[in-house]
Image 1 (tube, rainbow, N blue to C red):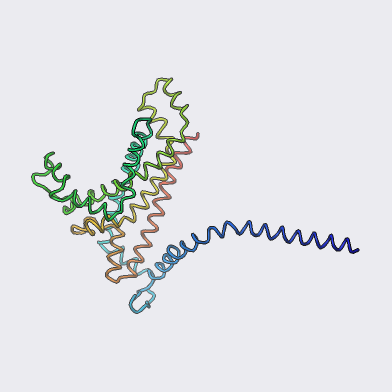
Image 2 (cartoon, rainbow, N blue to C red):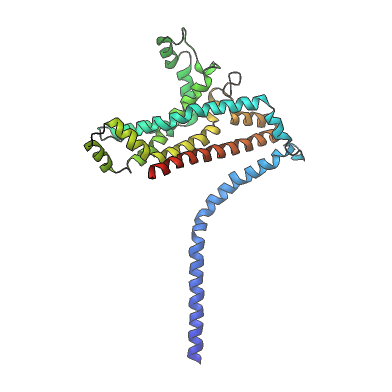
Length: 312
């Protein structure tokens, strides 16, 4: 009986120990994720919940209280001409930046992927704008765009303007001038994404195409571009999200001017917060969030359909 009791106790102890080990194995990934979850909760989830709360209140930030007004704040922003102007500028900004961020880094990636002398140097040079602080980049571009800057001199030489002109102070050119900063800043980052995808394409495909007589252009069009579709999806979604919340380059160069020509949705929200219109800013922020999610999902759906067609 003692042996049976001892064996039973050992089995129970072994089972309990095994259960504790399984529990620890299951808990270990969550322990590693805990810091990230805490940061996301503190800086993303809680602010979104507070923004939703403030958007349905007439919130007074100084008194830290507000009266429930329902959807009145949303009605106000949708009837605000400045909101629609900011939305238009945001869409125009995306319409310029998105195709440039898709194709320019792709072309650069194809070029630096060639086995030529100095390719590492070119990769480093193209990536330098990415690690350049936005404050430094904005100041540099402001000097380039100034009337004494090289860009102004080039435009005069080409006959575009009769006299030196600062593109950032012209309502017709300010938004385009800011998009150039955004594209330049992200060029190297998106190039690295394309470069990683390019290096995963089997070289046998290009060799077979060359044997069949395909030119470099046809190889790029019919092999490289289709094989880069997943990377295009990633770059597109990242560009849409970044473009919808563009702020730094505008705040540091034009501050939304001249005459509101570069006021995007985030600048509109920022200005409302600075005017202590917290509820209006929160409502506009939620609208921006929904638009960014919807645009990203639409882009992913379109590109995923393209990927399915390629697989077939």
